[in-house]
Length: 640
Image (cartoon, rainbow, N blue to C red; front, side, top):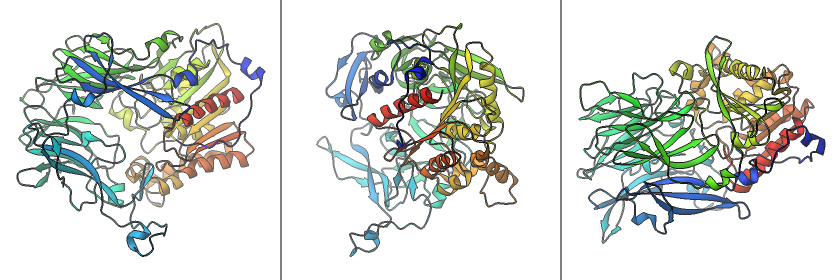
């Protein structure tokens, strides 16, 4: 998400006094950026240690410093590691040690002026004849990432061979694919890789990625998942050669129910098909090759599950939830005997690594990167609240309270609108939209699991599509109205904030809130549905979520969707709003924020436009992140 500072306004002392007193023990944006960010690397070869890296932002130099450590899975002091590569298995190297995989960019298409006219090498022009000319934050340059195979000679890779010669397709997948997109079979005879073998406009309107199997002996490639028309991703073999992966069924629907499937002798078994609430996020084979551990959102958290008999018997798979509690299991690192190592977060804590006893779900923390920092901070109380929606459903709402919360006082309160739109709102710990940081500035945070979120059944998850301006906005208002009945909520100081779909929600609620809110903040939000349809990169998303194109006059679903554009509600806008926009955001392009800011200014509404030319849909720069946090809370102090 990118933003541009148009104007900085100083706030006066009486505005500070409008908030409850904040002690030095509460989390600040500056202290927030000093927290260590833990990333698991894996288990040591002897499975006695966990290796992990810790990244810490260096604000002065606008970069992060990173160190690698190991800690025994039984706990104890961590030790810095100079060369982690010698302690962890190299999964790019074939199991028999004879070959190594890599990815390289290969020029396939002519795009630049110099490509077409070599004699005009100083021309600055790009020529496109199809869509997908830009993606996420990058303009297409005619290069595609391919998988390469090299023999290992004297311990080092030799001359590499392109496994996708001449193909205008990518592996790893753009923009977020990585090494998990190409893997070895355990017998070292085959490579399985992920690719969406479509180009241009066909690529932009489809989600049909497939798993391709390259045979080293014959040099041939076959499509293992041709029958499935949606996503096929994250392949992983067990040691016996059984292949598992994550699958969605419908082409064009990026948030379809994601199931865990396995293939035995070319026969595919869907292990989670009949569990309506389960939308698998990640998985890992058990060491005994018979079970699969996986994570999935459920009831406002992200938990660890195990499924047995994965396609190897006629018995229906048995799924068991291993962990329970108000926290997220955000990743599975590895297994050692009856112990799993996982990463875990909650609203008051950034990622740390824990062990899980597979038999009973008991957990023990083994990294303590931020313990000292959190020991100095007041914790934020979080609670589950169930709110009745306007259509009679029960909706889970997370409520986060400031440290030292006193029910006898009154607090300004923020309605948080989640992005996605189909992303789970759980006990995650974001280094941007951080509930602990918001609450620590003296705000109550109301975070509804509104329509469109996984973990509450497929019907709940899917009901947002083609109805962005419908029930989901009523869900938001139901949540804030319910919590506002409490005597400790200052109903004269309610704010509404959100990004992406959450930013759309802010723009829409600005025209629908009927005086509930005193201020709004929208980050990279969708303001105008027509221009969004004409500029966004992944057209499959727009086609699915809107139900078609705006020019399809006989398509009643599409016409209703486009009528719900927030730009149609600007006549009702009357409340201060801060708008944040990224210059390299090609998912929600710059004109969305520009149009919203221009409308607010022309209507004479107090407004601010933060524009970050070098950021995409997120804010990744260290100093930019600090500016984001300072401006976010400065605006709230000025207007709330």
